[in-house]
Length: 202
Ligand code: 5GP
Image (cartoon, rainbow, N blue to C red; front, side, top):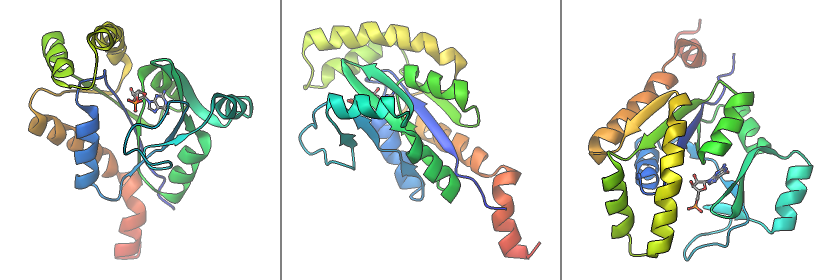
């Protein structure tokens, strides 16, 4: 039986360290792919179309919504973001394990229709540390930082329905925990049987 790809959903408030954890996760598991979302936000310096995101206009995004092309979508910081159903289905069918870096509104929509994913929430060790991390990024204005902190308190409440919570205090511990969660799911018997069959002809 063909092994289905695993879907790993990661959410976190801005500043919790999700981007760095994801980057490290892809180094540990080079065969895991990152889902490329669609967004109406403008590309940042260095972001390449089709790598960071598929950058589309509001009209293009809305027509995808109308065509039911999204497995989930949400408005985050005033822009629309969505995961194409096709991205999820293709990965699942071809046995590719996929990481989705999406906000909790989108993750909840996905969980309601698709419970077989692994839902992981990454938390900062405290609100004070979250503020410190956001303030140490030179890119954001004080107003943006305050908005992100307000939003973080709401997002953290959503962590209760995720399957796993990783607290990113020490980066080394957090990445180890995240990698362990991923490995445990990849080693479930039903996901191993295709490989076992090939190795031992059973
Ligand atoms: P950024 O614009 O900084 O790359 O991402 C902003 C937020 O949008 C992050 O919290 C990220 O997880 C979320 N996001 C990115 N892609 C998607 C998506 O396809 N769906 C949803 N719901 N959120 C997304």
